[in-house]
Length: 247
Image (cartoon, rainbow, N blue to C red; front, top):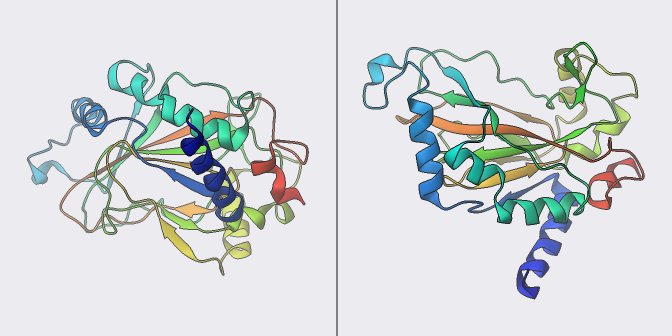
Protein backbone atom coordinates (compact mmCIF):
# COMPACT_ATOMS: atom_id res chain seq x y z
CA UNK A 1 0.00 0.00 0.00
CA UNK A 2 1.31 3.45 -0.86
CA UNK A 3 2.17 5.91 1.91
CA UNK A 4 -0.52 8.29 0.65
CA UNK A 5 -3.21 5.63 0.74
CA UNK A 6 -2.13 4.52 4.21
CA UNK A 7 -2.41 8.11 5.43
CA UNK A 8 -5.91 8.28 3.99
CA UNK A 9 -6.85 5.13 5.89
CA UNK A 10 -5.44 6.54 9.12
CA UNK A 11 -7.65 9.57 8.61
CA UNK A 12 -10.59 7.27 7.90
CA UNK A 13 -9.95 5.40 11.14
CA UNK A 14 -10.20 8.67 13.05
CA UNK A 15 -13.56 9.28 11.35
CA UNK A 16 -14.67 5.73 12.13
CA UNK A 17 -13.85 6.15 15.81
CA UNK A 18 -15.78 9.42 15.93
CA UNK A 19 -18.75 8.62 13.66
CA UNK A 20 -19.06 4.82 13.71
CA UNK A 21 -18.69 4.34 9.95
CA UNK A 22 -16.54 5.14 6.94
CA UNK A 23 -17.39 5.32 3.27
CA UNK A 24 -15.01 3.41 0.99
CA UNK A 25 -15.46 4.67 -2.59
CA UNK A 26 -15.16 2.23 -5.49
CA UNK A 27 -14.23 -1.03 -3.79
CA UNK A 28 -14.82 -2.34 -7.32
CA UNK A 29 -15.27 -0.50 -10.63
CA UNK A 30 -18.81 0.62 -11.38
CA UNK A 31 -19.21 -1.93 -14.16
CA UNK A 32 -18.69 -4.80 -11.71
CA UNK A 33 -21.50 -3.55 -9.48
CA UNK A 34 -23.66 -2.98 -12.57
CA UNK A 35 -23.14 -6.61 -13.58
CA UNK A 36 -24.05 -7.78 -10.08
CA UNK A 37 -27.25 -5.72 -10.22
CA UNK A 38 -28.13 -7.20 -13.64
CA UNK A 39 -27.81 -10.70 -12.21
CA UNK A 40 -30.00 -9.79 -9.26
CA UNK A 41 -32.76 -8.55 -11.60
CA UNK A 42 -32.82 -12.09 -13.04
CA UNK A 43 -33.53 -13.53 -9.57
CA UNK A 44 -36.57 -11.45 -8.66
CA UNK A 45 -40.04 -11.17 -10.17
CA UNK A 46 -40.09 -7.39 -10.84
CA UNK A 47 -38.84 -6.38 -14.29
CA UNK A 48 -36.38 -3.48 -14.61
CA UNK A 49 -38.18 -1.64 -17.44
CA UNK A 50 -41.76 -2.33 -16.30
CA UNK A 51 -42.78 -0.33 -13.18
CA UNK A 52 -46.15 -2.07 -13.19
CA UNK A 53 -44.32 -5.12 -11.81
CA UNK A 54 -42.92 -3.16 -8.87
CA UNK A 55 -45.81 -4.13 -6.61
CA UNK A 56 -43.96 -4.23 -3.26
CA UNK A 57 -41.89 -1.58 -1.48
CA UNK A 58 -39.06 -4.03 -0.82
CA UNK A 59 -38.05 -7.37 -2.34
CA UNK A 60 -35.30 -9.45 -0.76
CA UNK A 61 -32.77 -11.45 -2.73
CA UNK A 62 -29.27 -12.70 -1.92
CA UNK A 63 -25.85 -13.76 -3.08
CA UNK A 64 -24.92 -17.03 -1.38
CA UNK A 65 -22.13 -18.25 -3.69
CA UNK A 66 -19.82 -15.32 -4.38
CA UNK A 67 -19.75 -16.12 -8.07
CA UNK A 68 -18.74 -13.65 -10.76
CA UNK A 69 -19.11 -9.98 -9.82
CA UNK A 70 -20.23 -10.84 -6.28
CA UNK A 71 -16.92 -12.54 -5.63
CA UNK A 72 -15.03 -9.60 -7.07
CA UNK A 73 -16.77 -7.33 -4.58
CA UNK A 74 -16.34 -9.41 -1.44
CA UNK A 75 -12.66 -10.15 -2.23
CA UNK A 76 -11.84 -6.59 -3.30
CA UNK A 77 -8.31 -5.53 -2.35
CA UNK A 78 -9.53 -1.99 -1.67
CA UNK A 79 -12.18 -3.32 0.69
CA UNK A 80 -9.68 -5.62 2.43
CA UNK A 81 -7.30 -2.72 3.06
CA UNK A 82 -10.09 -0.65 4.58
CA UNK A 83 -11.15 -3.55 6.83
CA UNK A 84 -7.50 -4.00 7.85
CA UNK A 85 -7.40 -0.37 8.89
CA UNK A 86 -10.54 -0.67 11.02
CA UNK A 87 -10.23 -4.16 12.50
CA UNK A 88 -6.54 -4.96 12.01
CA UNK A 89 -5.05 -7.31 9.37
CA UNK A 90 -5.75 -10.35 11.56
CA UNK A 91 -8.92 -8.96 13.12
CA UNK A 92 -11.53 -10.00 10.57
CA UNK A 93 -12.45 -13.10 8.57
CA UNK A 94 -12.61 -12.86 4.76
CA UNK A 95 -16.08 -13.70 3.46
CA UNK A 96 -17.21 -15.62 0.40
CA UNK A 97 -20.51 -13.99 -0.55
CA UNK A 98 -22.52 -10.78 -0.14
CA UNK A 99 -25.48 -12.39 1.61
CA UNK A 100 -28.82 -10.57 1.92
CA UNK A 101 -29.70 -7.85 -0.58
CA UNK A 102 -32.87 -5.76 -0.17
CA UNK A 103 -34.18 -4.08 -3.31
CA UNK A 104 -36.26 -1.01 -2.43
CA UNK A 105 -38.82 0.10 -5.00
CA UNK A 106 -40.73 3.36 -5.32
CA UNK A 107 -44.06 2.53 -3.71
CA UNK A 108 -46.97 4.31 -2.08
CA UNK A 109 -46.91 1.97 0.93
CA UNK A 110 -44.26 1.84 3.65
CA UNK A 111 -42.23 -1.35 3.98
CA UNK A 112 -42.73 -1.64 7.78
CA UNK A 113 -39.03 -2.41 8.26
CA UNK A 114 -37.77 1.11 8.72
CA UNK A 115 -37.31 1.27 12.50
CA UNK A 116 -34.06 2.36 14.15
CA UNK A 117 -31.94 -0.66 15.06
CA UNK A 118 -28.56 -2.35 15.07
CA UNK A 119 -28.05 -5.50 13.05
CA UNK A 120 -28.02 -8.82 14.88
CA UNK A 121 -24.35 -9.71 15.32
CA UNK A 122 -24.30 -12.61 17.79
CA UNK A 123 -24.99 -16.10 16.36
CA UNK A 124 -26.84 -18.43 18.74
CA UNK A 125 -26.59 -22.21 18.89
CA UNK A 126 -30.15 -22.65 17.64
CA UNK A 127 -29.45 -20.74 14.42
CA UNK A 128 -31.00 -17.45 15.50
CA UNK A 129 -29.11 -14.19 15.77
CA UNK A 130 -29.11 -11.73 18.66
CA UNK A 131 -27.45 -8.53 19.88
CA UNK A 132 -25.23 -8.05 22.91
CA UNK A 133 -22.35 -5.96 24.18
CA UNK A 134 -19.99 -8.54 22.62
CA UNK A 135 -20.78 -8.47 18.87
CA UNK A 136 -19.19 -10.99 16.49
CA UNK A 137 -19.57 -9.06 13.23
CA UNK A 138 -19.14 -5.71 11.55
CA UNK A 139 -21.78 -4.46 9.11
CA UNK A 140 -20.76 -3.81 5.52
CA UNK A 141 -23.14 -1.97 3.17
CA UNK A 142 -22.34 -2.29 -0.55
CA UNK A 143 -24.17 -0.07 -3.02
CA UNK A 144 -25.13 -1.90 -6.22
CA UNK A 145 -27.06 1.00 -7.79
CA UNK A 146 -26.84 4.77 -7.73
CA UNK A 147 -28.14 5.96 -4.37
CA UNK A 148 -28.99 9.63 -4.00
CA UNK A 149 -30.75 11.43 -1.14
CA UNK A 150 -34.20 10.20 -2.27
CA UNK A 151 -33.24 6.67 -3.42
CA UNK A 152 -33.91 5.15 0.02
CA UNK A 153 -30.38 5.62 1.37
CA UNK A 154 -29.82 3.99 4.74
CA UNK A 155 -30.19 6.56 7.51
CA UNK A 156 -27.36 6.61 10.03
CA UNK A 157 -27.24 8.14 13.50
CA UNK A 158 -23.73 9.54 13.55
CA UNK A 159 -21.76 8.58 16.65
CA UNK A 160 -24.55 6.38 18.01
CA UNK A 161 -22.12 3.49 18.53
CA UNK A 162 -20.77 5.30 21.59
CA UNK A 163 -24.17 5.08 23.32
CA UNK A 164 -24.79 1.35 22.99
CA UNK A 165 -22.41 -0.25 25.55
CA UNK A 166 -24.51 1.42 28.26
CA UNK A 167 -27.72 -0.06 26.81
CA UNK A 168 -26.72 -3.62 25.93
CA UNK A 169 -25.49 -6.41 28.20
CA UNK A 170 -23.50 -9.64 27.96
CA UNK A 171 -26.79 -11.55 27.74
CA UNK A 172 -27.90 -11.97 24.09
CA UNK A 173 -31.10 -10.06 23.32
CA UNK A 174 -33.61 -10.37 20.50
CA UNK A 175 -32.81 -7.57 18.01
CA UNK A 176 -36.46 -6.59 17.67
CA UNK A 177 -36.79 -6.22 21.43
CA UNK A 178 -33.60 -4.16 21.48
CA UNK A 179 -34.93 -1.75 18.82
CA UNK A 180 -36.84 0.62 21.14
CA UNK A 181 -33.92 0.69 23.59
CA UNK A 182 -31.31 1.66 21.01
CA UNK A 183 -33.73 4.13 19.41
CA UNK A 184 -34.34 5.97 22.69
CA UNK A 185 -30.67 5.95 23.66
CA UNK A 186 -29.55 7.56 20.39
CA UNK A 187 -32.46 9.79 19.38
CA UNK A 188 -30.42 12.99 19.75
CA UNK A 189 -27.67 11.97 17.34
CA UNK A 190 -27.23 13.81 14.00
CA UNK A 191 -28.08 12.03 10.76
CA UNK A 192 -26.03 10.91 7.76
CA UNK A 193 -27.12 8.99 4.67
CA UNK A 194 -25.44 6.09 2.86
CA UNK A 195 -25.42 7.62 -0.60
CA UNK A 196 -23.02 6.93 -3.46
CA UNK A 197 -22.39 5.11 -6.70
CA UNK A 198 -22.45 1.41 -7.61
CA UNK A 199 -19.35 -0.16 -6.11
CA UNK A 200 -19.11 2.16 -3.09
CA UNK A 201 -19.22 0.60 0.38
CA UNK A 202 -19.77 1.62 3.98
CA UNK A 203 -18.01 -0.14 6.88
CA UNK A 204 -20.13 0.24 10.00
CA UNK A 205 -19.44 -0.39 13.68
CA UNK A 206 -21.69 -3.21 15.00
CA UNK A 207 -23.26 -0.70 17.43
CA UNK A 208 -24.07 1.88 14.74
CA UNK A 209 -27.80 2.64 14.86
CA UNK A 210 -29.39 2.91 11.42
CA UNK A 211 -32.69 2.58 9.59
CA UNK A 212 -34.18 2.03 6.17
CA UNK A 213 -36.48 4.54 4.55
CA UNK A 214 -38.97 4.85 1.69
CA UNK A 215 -37.75 5.13 -1.90
CA UNK A 216 -39.01 8.44 -3.31
CA UNK A 217 -37.51 8.26 -6.80
CA UNK A 218 -38.41 6.36 -9.94
CA UNK A 219 -35.53 3.87 -9.75
CA UNK A 220 -35.09 0.80 -7.55
CA UNK A 221 -32.23 0.79 -5.02
CA UNK A 222 -29.97 -2.25 -4.69
CA UNK A 223 -27.72 -2.61 -1.63
CA UNK A 224 -26.06 -5.63 0.00
CA UNK A 225 -25.99 -5.97 3.79
CA UNK A 226 -22.94 -8.06 4.59
CA UNK A 227 -21.91 -9.33 8.04
CA UNK A 228 -18.10 -9.36 8.31
CA UNK A 229 -17.02 -11.72 11.07
CA UNK A 230 -14.43 -10.51 13.54
CA UNK A 231 -11.63 -12.90 14.46
CA UNK A 232 -12.79 -12.66 18.09
CA UNK A 233 -16.00 -11.26 19.62
CA UNK A 234 -15.52 -7.57 20.28
CA UNK A 235 -14.67 -6.42 23.78
CA UNK A 236 -12.60 -3.78 25.59
CA UNK A 237 -9.36 -5.44 24.47
CA UNK A 238 -10.34 -5.58 20.80
CA UNK A 239 -9.04 -3.56 17.84
CA UNK A 240 -8.70 0.08 18.98
CA UNK A 241 -10.89 1.56 16.26
CA UNK A 242 -13.73 -0.70 17.41
CA UNK A 243 -13.10 -1.00 21.15
CA UNK A 244 -12.93 2.71 22.01
CA UNK A 245 -16.68 2.59 22.67
CA UNK A 246 -16.02 0.67 25.89
CA UNK A 247 -13.82 3.37 27.43
